[in-house]
Image (tube, rainbow, N blue to C red; front, side):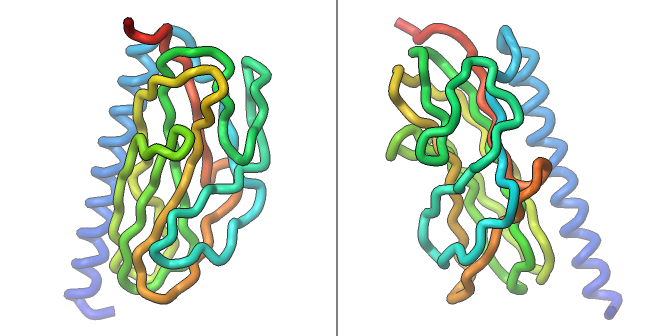
Length: 178
């Protein structure tokens, strides 16, 4: 590896560490700022393959870690059973990337975008962009979805499925603001 390549790779690692610390700080602040605990967590058990370039794709969550309100999964999303303010955190782990690409982590309420974070990878490796985190005002019957999009050219890419790979956490903050 050339000295310049090594320096660029180290710079990218440091950037990703800062992004993670920033996102972790937000998440820690969210957890301490709201009453109660997260009420729902889901993840993929295996990889979701062949995500097409430039297409917004719903993550096909198939396993629930915990569900304190018995909501289950509806069309791969979290079905809101009580009107209120919720927080959502979505983390996505991309598998084996091209050498250059942009990646979006998206949270939707029904068909409306609520949160959008973007990451850029310049190395051909696995990649986890910053998680998307947001507060969402929702009504009973709404569904909170995790979605992804990549802008890498013509490649179809995969996201990693394990309990620590691609996952979504939902928490109830309180009643809707009047």
